[in-house]
Image 1 (tube, rainbow, N blue to C red):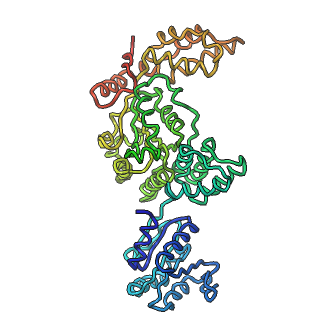
Image 2 (image 1 turned 60 degrees about the vertical axis):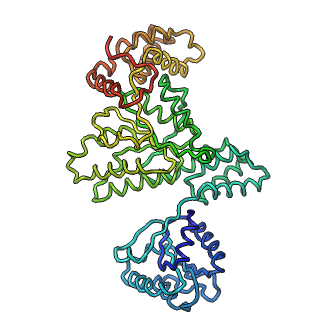
Image 3 (image 1 turned 90 degrees about the vertical axis):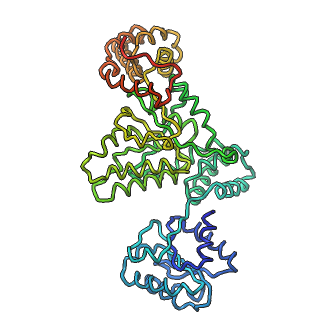
Length: 499
């Protein structure tokens, strides 16, 4: 059922007091006018603190700067007459004892009248005494069909409607924006380019970045990395590429649910974070990074409120990729923490959302030490799949060297012995291979020459990989994965640590 249908049902059922939390005043008022037409032109009265009542010439300016008088105005309307009364920004006044009492009195009076009092506010703020008499109504952001109508209308004015696949991609990029923001960003694109096509998706995503800048919980992470930048991990890449079209309207018509997410477990520096960035870039979705530490606040209940806000923001900006980095550090040993159960409640909220969410938020969670994660997180239903990202095998090390060397010496790649480099760097992670190249470049630059294969081998000989310094931890991770609890991201098992 749509937001308009839900709201119309409550109005028909004579719910006396409704509370709609939204920043989209114009869109809500347009919806009410549409409902009014369906309810035999039911009159609408609109009030705000500065202008008082507006619209009806006889009522203009009534109750200006007086919220209590605004409620008394409702009492003066003829009892048999149908009406909808919309009070803007009324959350600022309901803590007042006189206003609160008057609302409770009106709730009783209006039960027998065809009138509805609608409180409009950007957030839900209800004192305890009003929670039983006011019905909170969800008014979600524009859905696909509403966005489609708006884009088609704007494109009609240009005389150029994009092809259906391009239009579908633009609609997907606009999801999570208010109608006003959509009009603003599309207007800016048209003013700059005189047209609208698939190349403008990044400009729409930039508008979503503006929203995240107003919060301190999620970070909009720019992505340039592609699937091709990931050396190896063929099983994981193949799995991701198969789901690339799962956020499209064609997938909805086919009956596919939105992909839920993936948990990447493995040794540090093996490409888990790179994979999160590549997924968002490959699927043309915004990447939201969550530092779980930002969820925890010092006040009672603040951490839980921040967690709910994080979920609300992610779902509002859907479709998107939510990257929860190093989840093991955030929730290791939560049962034994002396924080009054805050960590457990935050964790419980997150895993419940992971299990029940139906929104287009693809969660990429990474962890280095899976053994400290609560077992509830690893149950089926939280993620579509759990992948173990181990140390790269020889073929993968060659591919990683090729990726990194192509960035700095694309025209001289043939000068490097990739086979020998891959053979001599057993136990190296992708991050350690990258560091090896940087060290070789420093060495050669200090001698005013280009770096060679020998420089790379010399740099590698001076690096002690984590697989050797943390041998026991690496073995435990590999044994955990080999026990069948996760899929291997690589087609061939990595070489065991040590020669």
